[in-house]
Length: 452
Image (cartoon, rainbow, N blue to C red; front, side, top):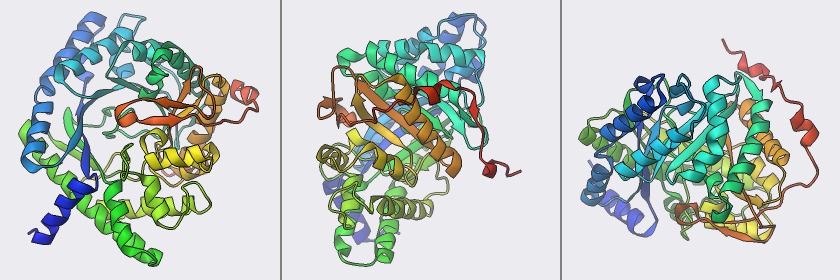
C-alpha cells in the first residue's frame, strides 16, 4: 500500500525533478521472416513489425495520460539484420534498412534498432554485407539505429572488425556531413553487447528472447540529484543508502509501466533497465550528481570513485524493485546528452582520457562524443579498441559512439537536437595508432573467460 507521502513524493519527482520513463521498447524477433528472396524477406519484416507494434505508440500515450507519467520515447528493436538477411540472394543490405525505416514511420515510433551484426569472433556473409551497408543505410534513413559487437570476454577483440568500424564511422560522418555527422549518433560499437537493451542506438532483439517482449528504460538523474541535496556533509554510507532508496522508487514506477504496457499490448514483459539516462535539460544530469557529492567539476580527481558509488547504489536499489532487471542498468555518461558533462568538457576539466577511466565503473562507455572531423579512422579504431579492452577484461558491457564532425575542430560545438543535445568537439591524441590497428587478427580473450 502506498502512503500519501509516497504519492506526493512521486508527483514532485515528475513535476520538478525530471523523472520519466525514457522508453518503452518492443523487441520483435524476425527469425521467421527469413527468405532467400530479398524482396520477400523485406516484405515479411515490414509486415511483422507493423503487426506487432501497431498499437505500441497509442498504448504508451494512454498510459502516459492515465498515470501522469512522462514516457519520452516509444521504440522498436529487432533481431540483428545480419542474421535475418544473411541467406538472402542479394549483395545490398541498404534496402533492409529502408524497410525498417518505413515500418518505424508507419508505427509512429521514435527509433528502431537492430541494423546490427555480431562479429566478436569473425565475419559471416551477412555480417560482411551489413557492415558494408551501414554508412549508406544511416544516411538514407531517419529512424534506423545500428550497432556492431566487436569484442567479448569469451572471444577477445576482433581487431579486423575494430579497424573496419573506424573506417565505417568516418564514411558515415562524410555521408551525413550536412547534418553534422548525425548518422554517427545512430551507430554504436560494443563489447559484450546485451540482448535486452531498450536504449538506442544499441538496442537489438537477441536470439534468446521471446518472439516479442516489452522492455522499459527508466531515468531519474534529477531525482537522485535532489535526494542528495538532503544529505550534504553526510558520510558516503548515507549517500549510498539515499541513492539506493531513490533508485528503488524510480524502478518501481518503471515496473508498473512495463507491466501495464505488457498487459495492454498482449506482449510478455521482458526487463526494466534502471539506467540513469540524462538529458540536455538543466537539473537532469549525471555530472551534477557527482558534483553534488563534493566535486568542484565533473572530471576532476575523485570523479571515477564517485561514479562507481553511484552506479553500484543504483543497481542495488533498482534490483529490489523489479523481478526482471536487465539491459545495461547503471549510470550513462553521454557527453552531448548531459548539460553537466557538456559544461565540464567545455571547461577543459573533462577530457577523453578521464571519460575512458570513468567507463570502467559506469553502465556503458564513451558515448555521444564529438571529435574533430579530420580525426583519422585509425584513431577512431584505437579508441574503440581501448574501450573494448575495458569491457573484455572487466566482463562488462562497454561501447563507443563517437562523431567526427566535418569542418569542426576543438572548441567548436555541434548541435544534434532533441535528446541528442549539443556536443563540444573534444581533442584526441594526435600521435598515430595506425601501425597498431593495421596488425589485425584477434586480441585473445583474458584468462577470466575460462569459467566453464
